[in-house]
Amino acid sequence: MSGSIPEKWSSKRLKKGTAGSRWRIESELAPVPAMQRRLEEKYGGRIPGKLFLKKDSHLPIVGSVKARGGIYEVLKYAEDLALTHGMLKKTDSYEKLAEPECRAFFGKYTIQAGSTGNLGMSIGVMSAALGFHCIIHMSSDARQWKKDLLRSHGATVMEYGGDYGEAVKEGREKSERDPASYFVDDENSRSLFLGYAVAALRLRKQLEERNVKTDDDHPLFVYIPCGVGGAPGGISFGLKQLFGDTVHCFFAEPVQAPCMALGMITGLHSKICVQDIGLTGQTHADGLAVGRPSAFVGRVMEPLLSGEFTVRDARLYEYMRDCLETEKIFLEPSACAAFQGPVRLCSDKAAAAYLEENGLKEKMEQASHIVWATGGSLVPEEIRKEYRETFL
Ligand SMILES: *Cc1c(COP(=O)(O)O)cnc(C)c1O
Image 1 (cartoon, helix red, strand yellow):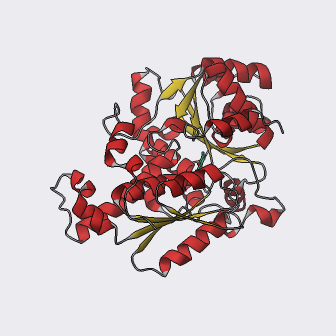
Image 2 (cartoon, protein in one colour):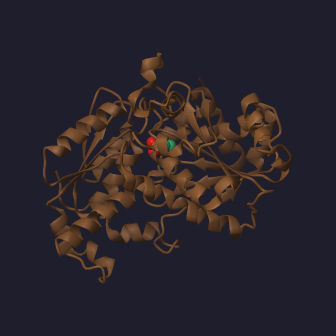
Image 3 (cartoon, protein in one colour):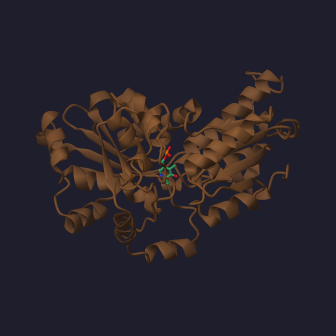
């Protein structure tokens, strides 16, 4: 295990990554009219209103939605540690956290997480930047390039044969045995959830800047890919606080791993997994290969979530190519799951019933649709090529 901070993730580099955003970790909200036309032509059915892409795929530092929750949780842990050990006072500049005394102090602690890839990258990078030791427990479906990248920056990567739930379990147990270790628990963490929720405040401002109306006559539809539930849950929770009934949040999950839908429909939440009903839990969608949902997100979402869409892996690659061809934006296949939202909302019977029941049918021309693109900008070129050439 290396305690030194790799040059690549030095605070200078972090500063550069967030330059232009005043150190903020935030992404662009982009109109995608050409993609909207492509979806209409290729998959049938008109999509009334305007389509936008929320490009968390291009978030600074780690290029995925996990930058929101993961980086926040590591910073919060560092802050708590430093405050309780007298390394930092609330009145100090928080730049102190990056100074050598703090780094040496953090070097006595270990941060661990279970991950299919992107969460690990976000926790690993931020932990290393502050001087923590870091162990990431990876499931067997995690991509080699993500493991390599983490290792090259000083994190220890442990691999497990089983799925994501197993990696989390192993990591949690290993962390519990070490009093100087902190476990970022994707299945239970409130900090991660709240880190994601901040997106709502930023989005409101971006909508205002683009003169996008959101009110009784201008509904807002938001579609987010869902794995264990923390990211889409946190973002939706934030949005519902700000926009109330004006916003309609939908999750998208792979057909073989719809753990959140299953947990919510049965009311059993984390007490049921997709394998229990004969599904494999396997999918090409990195980050969405989750068999068992978060222990608390589904319950929080019960009164807030408008619906769920499932999507086949083959379609993810189609959406990915569509977006690349029409908008010149590369997204990783899992991030494309959310395009299923606007496509199905405007063609599906159950969705039509939802629009009817909520008095939305006549308002759809004034609607805004936001597809939440959750990852992609760090995917290496050779893997992008492999994705572009995948037809299932
Ligand atoms: C993690 C992830 C998600 C889903 O987030 P959860 O908190 O697991 O629900 C979606 N897309 C990508 C690319 C991810 O890495």
